[in-house]
Length: 586
Image: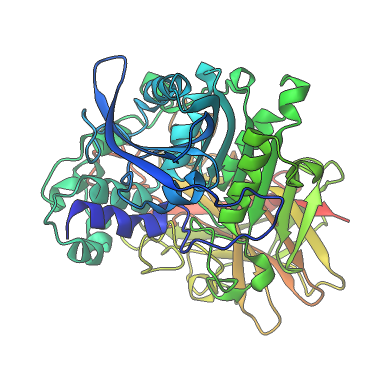
């Protein structure tokens, strides 16, 4: 399998999947009236002399046109590229560029670290071309969204609009979630992006579980036969230090003057970044005119935002849950770059799909101003282990001094669901959690069946008071919707490494046996728990291979090769009121 085919295969999981070119008949959108001129492998020179391979598709007509720019590590297409033909035929100049070190571009591929300067230099080059009308709109998903965000604060005067899909703007926050490394996502992506032309990808896929169990983490690449230097760098920088500066816009949203349509999925691993980007671009210190041009769209999707049939994981959200991404891109770009009245700016800034109810809804802000943040406290008689235990969940404060205990064994971690899926971290979706909830190292707290519908829409957090026999360990939390009959579907989840309980710049181990307060960010969801359903919270200490295992030794997680079992205690009393904080919408 050659490298271009490898990238194409990988894109099914790591970028937005647009499987066909639609026929758009709406007169309010640009129509395909132009023949297309192609200029392939044009070398654009960056400030350090490195030349990046750039394909240009433009209308076969005189004049200047707005520009659609996509910078990608997955291959910039070729003759008859579908993006090039689609947009150029509708009156856009289209620029598709291989990022540094990829395909026909010069230089070395070092993820994130050159995208700000390379992206800005490319935008400046595009804006000066004879076929450009000096208005640029950027598009693309996953890494192709990062190539939009990182150069944006540098302030190219040509950048007018962005449409980043399932992406983030701070690599550290996505590669060190709660201080924990997203093992399956990071290693599989790294291996596939650096694989030789003739490497057997199917064989590697079949070995990922075995590879991810190997220690030390920093040498997992030796099992594939070559060093992945950037993966080793990521593992060597678990704190938010200077290494990560080039991989973040550093919260500098005020320097961005573009309208941004953020698109995400409730089950996408980067949904937290998507939401933070929208919040950053709509904060009070953003110029009101810029703030008015921001949009957020979140559907019941994973990293691939199109399932064609409304199904994700083990649930069917209905055909109504699907969105025509080609039409959405055109609607956005026609509005922002051509000034056409496509209707998109007449809609409220936020559009979310409310699961359970399975309906789209417009909102004026995120999080919703009318949110009632309600605490549901953990209760038990000390036997909340497994779904058959006595753990319960209610708005009533716990009495007494109850606690639940379990043993976390790094040699037998709680498996991620859907376990065994190709790219577990990216094949996320609603899956029945009962196989996980049968384990003794999973604590389960559930409400009684609800007497009326309850909507939960917004950020979700779990606060636990816990002690461990280890010097360092992890705690996980998961919000689950339990259907009548027992099926238990995950909504959102999170993890915290004990050493990062106070932040990500100065980690410290814990004192064995001492009770600490932990805040676990479950990011966000939107779901109606129907009457008769139950709200459930799972607490444990591992979610593998989505996240790396804490070996409980307190040593360097990237180089350690030994582990110990940890005895974990979760307290729930008036002194230690462990709970989940739910954003309830009346």
